[in-house]
Image 1 (cartoon, rainbow, N blue to C red):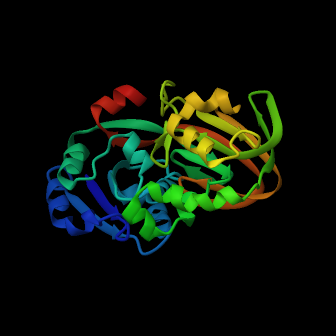
Image 2: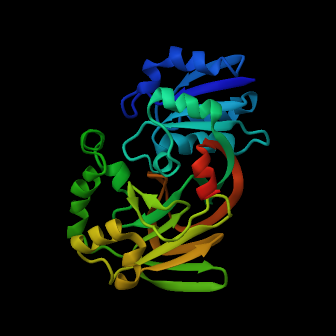
Image 3: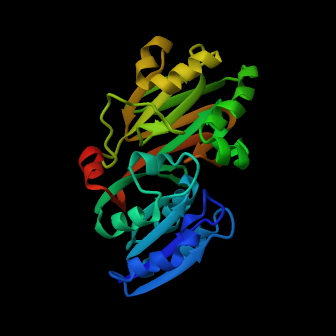
Length: 302
């Protein structure tokens, strides 16, 4: 059995880098060979995993959701894919929070060695993979335009502070959608495709029971006449689906969708800019990766 430790030294408090000896010792109880890969910059992990992931039974990843996205991208093209153990190390860590993964190293290693292995869906937007969200429109770029030092010191509050700049913009997007025989067209501020119940630390779906291995995502469309003020945005983020009817927000459960814009726009996946285009094909690849989670999370989401 062979394991790879892969971590982003610039993410969060860099706990993995400071505890490599302990992590290797814990892993050695189950894995006879242990390698280490330190990311050197954005997307550096992708080519490494495309070349080497097939040689491992486990990949232990530490970083933000962007690092997890890069790891998934690196292993998706291979028939034999290692199990992922994910130690959240970023600011909000939507995936880590949703799956109740552990940031403290001792607890993270307990979970890595004794947790439940589950098969989870992966989304695909054109040629880009995503673990939990794709989106476009106002505020959707907040996670990567907000300065790192603000996110580090203020957490998700930094998104609101920096996102206030968007309030002066009345920018809306003319979008058309096709899915499951349904066609929608109009002016929208935001659209989200989510395989998650929350985003940027805020719960969007509270009553709706989300499953992460059913081959489906929630397509949420926010009309341009719905959220025109900051108080309404706050209400949407804090109240989630309870605000849908009040503000005319549309939500559909789909396995695939086609999005067309009247002009090229930024598409964001897992908190990072993916591409700029006027057309996007979205589909869900069912149960394509294996990840370690607590038992109670397996019962809730899988």
